[in-house]
Length: 566
Image 1 (cartoon, rainbow, N blue to C red):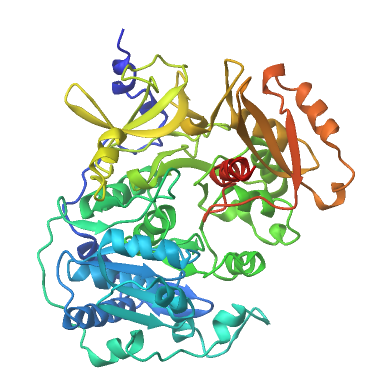
Image 2: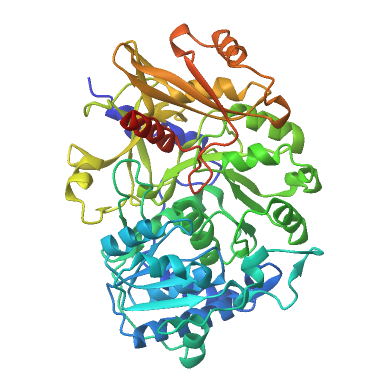
């Protein structure tokens, strides 16, 4: 029996907020068009606040236009790729829109990437130019790639003259280092000064032309370039805006999540600026400075990740913020543990709205309705998105309540992976002539259309014939009062398939006192016998991804590397 009709009926729609449509029209406009419309409307209003420095929409537009003219004069043309190797800063926003204005594609690079990773992304994407922070230039030079143009900028170029905020210094060496002038390399500010704000007019087809090409984290093999058109990104912004119906030009949004990452790029930067909101931008998540900025600038929207909320719920300054005043407090990029939600509510008397998305879907595909959130669920599909659950090893749609792989159908879905036809083919499922994206995530949908996360398909542990979700074990471990962080993986074993291993970070006061046996006994009281970790390892910290997730991939690679050296 095919259960596709269970999902096509969209049972989640009845839980949408009043006035939220099941479908919403996606404007057939490019990102530069929407940006220009916003800057025309909100001219003198602050678009960015960067460590106290206010930059208006009009100034942002002027600088983007000047840089676009400069890039064109350097010879960059429609269809060329421009790499952005920048911290969160006004320069990131200016460079992003400047490149798009002349029809180029941006490919953002993580600021923590090594020279080897930079080399791979630049060569794979075929980028002709890179715009980078001067403190990151050495890694670009060391990569030894052939680029037509390198443009450098210093973060201080947009900082206020007074290098103190809230009575203390900030940014450390980044904020105080003088701009570097490097022979043969273009200076960002020189391009702005030399060129008028009159970039060449280009015609952009939103449905076919590539706006952005972020790279996935490379969970298997090399990272893959995700091909996103202007239409994909505008569709994502439109759907998110429809779900939460912000008042245009009224919100103030904290922007510390990295803009190179899809959540920060689409959920904060693009959505915020094209709707006329003000972004309070931080290069790094300095907790105390961010908390003080929330009150100083009357921030109304806060977007974070689970590890941050876990930290903030116990932070001494968290109660200095009136969290109940905020319009929305969002969480994405990883699973939010129920214990974190409970402790946060108790400490702040406010609720965190959990959502779900991935780079291939232009960030958010699911959100919890504000009036009816469900703890333990990442919510319901947003407008224009149809979600379903299929057999991970086949194509059959599964009944409501059964765990399988999440698939998505939406105008936000990527075109494919850059120069990777086989991987693109494997990423999609075709049923009745319709194309669905395989997410690789194991979930279930309940009777009301809310979706619940279980694990990444590749993180499923096969132990003695049982299927064990690493997340189930981690959820139990996170309830232990002395456990600060944990990651669970399967270690290959010829007799048992995989042995379950938990890597645990204890609270500082518990280190050297809590034993492996105590943790194991705690699990035995709360988990089926086959789910109890056989191996427990204590560490001072765990490897994290760029957005703060515990990286199970790196933990598994450690095991693989250890096996090879034996």
